[in-house]
Image (cartoon, rainbow, N blue to C red; front, side, top):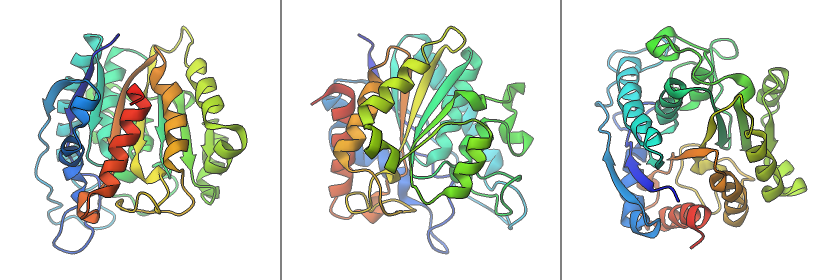
Length: 299
């Protein structure tokens, strides 16, 4: 049995401000899940916190590339150091975000160690890049594109390790069926996409089990799971920055995550995007904690 280690990565550097003069509240995710006793319920060890730089876009304007890029690059290295140390020790990190840009820290850490895959459980593929959009700026919607080497060098080629992920080692789950243009681009790149409709047609357990087995190949050293809370339907998870309709229900998400996280080849998990500022009663945070605990330890 591997030790589960909970590590906080409370960065909001990759999101646009929700309103002028404010900052995204997802940096409170880790605290909110800890308030739900997630560490104790996972029977996890304490991994501490990787403190992010200040959220400050300065005089950034549209067209300037990714905002907070310098801070993001520094934080990615710092988070990668911690994740790498845990994976090398044979532990299983559960990284509590934060926005989705924290995935760059895990991807860089694993790239230092070898060749690893990514199972991204997300409502959208976070694959915005200069080749498909003129609105580059928020790394939280671009982290998979960045990790696969698409975008500015100061984020895609840290330590000369571009790409951190190979296209063929990425899998998407829970993408909304409406994202047809994104799905067409990913299909052309031969990156598998499993939509909400696919999950309901073929079964979450069967699809996740097949994916976990697909990573059991000598060429790949393992894989990481990235969970964005917006994969859940906004009827149960409204506290996200982009609450797209027709998402997964909690039981469906647990059924999808369990085979992935139970695989001996899975080396860690991110949890991102839940915003406690949008959840004054804490009910969505309690649900997210329940999902993570049920998926990892079955309680």
